[in-house]
Image 1 (cartoon, rainbow, N blue to C red):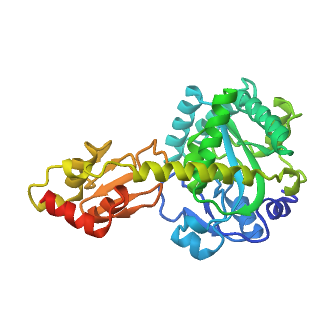
Image 2: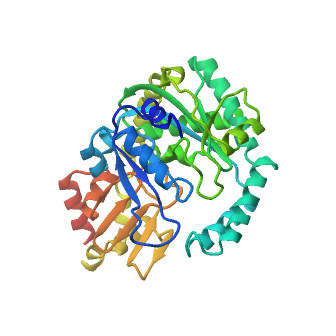
Image 3: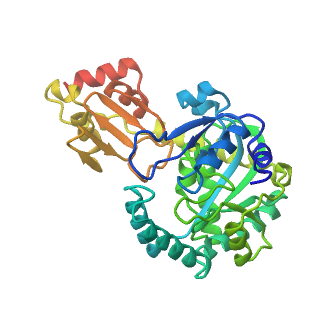
Amino acid sequence: MKGLQSFYKAFYGHSFYRHFRRPPDFNLKKFRIQFTVENPKTLYLHVHRNSSHHPCLIHTYDYGSKGNLRERNKSKIVFDRAFFDFDVTNPQIKEIKNELISLRSHGLNYQKEKQEDLTEILQKLIIKKKVAKPAIDEAKDFALKFKETFGKEPALFFSGCKGCHAYTFFKASSFKNIDLALSWFAEHIKNTYNYETLDLSVNRDSTARLSRIPYSKHQITQLAVVSFTIDDDYLEIMRKSLNPYVEPFEIEDHSTNFHKHLQKIDLVESFNANVKKTTKPKNVALSGNFNNQRNLNDHRIFFRSILGNPVREYPEKNYVMYQCPFPDHTDIKPSFMVHKCGYQCYSCQKKGNYWQFLKDYYNLSDIQVKKCLKEML
């Protein structure tokens, strides 16, 4: 696609450190799932080779250096944009997508005609039945209100299926916890303006969020991720998606001082989270049944005594899952894994053993932890 490399240069910058992910639709080890992209040319080549067959997803935020990306160092991520996702829930599309994914699990050429028929049905639902229209309309309304407040409208992109993305750009800034700030902002506008399609889960774990790459094809619908404006009607957006072409893009047209607003929210929400953390009752940890040393040797027993029954259990894999007890983020889908030797949250990245948990969760010193454990045993 002509001009695509220049677009990525304008959209992502001259150099960056992000993960490009291409989850395979069928289980063959020869397919690499994850790449590190560092410049527009590398990104363009991956999209050019993989788009239309596999999902082309990328980290929304730049990690700033290869070391930070490798170590998942969230404290040093470069935040220069905010990302909002509008998505329609449609059971019919979900059912067809699942059937198509099931066929693809046997290979791209397995029952190829049926795969093509299902893809055509999806396209008709999206284009003629206007499945994505509620999400697009709400995104346009959000863009207008955002422009009224911050001076410039966000960049809007149709996702290639039943939703769309809104990006606003700002000066690269640091935050105590951008997830808390974005979650508060997204929840506030969702409740204020009754945006039914605004997906709050995106902002609750924004640093791990993957977004579809502009001008890549949706691997299921074969519709392209294309930009649109407030003035474009639904059918015009669909025509662009069916016959994509790269439109001129200047990041300055969508750059605002939104980061200053986010930083104010960040300070308040981070303070509130710390208050909740420091006001936890410190005697709760003593309520468990610790009659023998075995309870401390097996963390699954320890956490069952502290947090109760797990949300999910995987006996064959020897671990259990809880909703993360730490107040730093909202954990709708359980991401707090506990195994025999310790714990790890895949959302906030906290990990350790029972000693570390008592220190962090109840805000105790090493001496206090030692005293608590002595009383328990």
